Image 1: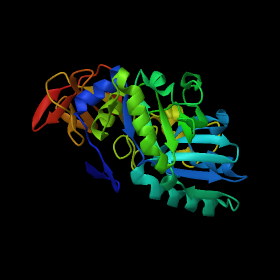
Image 2: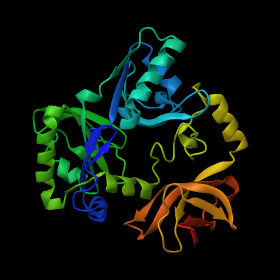
Image 3: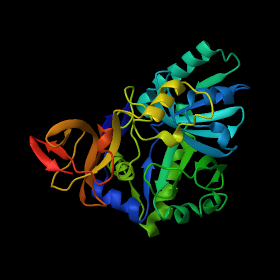
Image 4: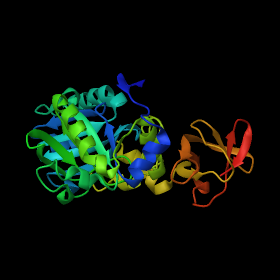
Length: 337
């Protein structure tokens, strides 16, 4: 167990590799109650959401979720989020635990500056526990527990229903592993019973509880960004390769800066790295090209699926083509990648 953004969190239960492979082959259960939930409601909620999000919430309907960076006027990222659209007047922003207070404060600053007097912004993190079930067997495990066939919930949509016949929950077909699965939002007092029921229902399918260690290796294999690594106060969504989540068909904070970057290109680009030589690329390691520094690693691990060192890093944009050979400096040694 470790301290993580003020929460006591499991790094591993049986071991990162075992847990990682359980999610890839069967299914795993994550207690992600540390995630923050901020609700924005009121007549102007949709206008506010459109202003703070780079993505276009009007492209989704009620009952859908959408991924988006949240940007300041200079294009830097406050956090990345999945937004749940309950209706035109009500949105739930699911944010990173370490950024919840920062996002809440920033939302209130934007509300004041841009004048949204009727808007209600509430930190509801304390009233939601969140359990994620991820892996190819997730639908089968959920089937006996949910009030509808979980297979009917489409990707990036959510269902407000009952678990175990009586426990109210929001169940979305989303996740952070690259596998099929669901994220369940429910009252903290109901969470232990649902966790136990999922573990019981998942026994025949090889379910396993999963810690933070495997959560990181799973998301990194998929190239999903983690705030503080691939995204930060100093990194824009265009530099991070998230241009498809930036919609210039509408107005939003940071649009001018990001539009210029999209049109003119950026000096650096985020790339995925796979080691050729032995070694693990760790955050902070220098990336070299022809013996000269071109950037550095921002996330790295040993991939249990690929059985190789993998990572993400920023390099000079001219080097971003797939297959480009670079060196990662590991303890003074330049290793090919």
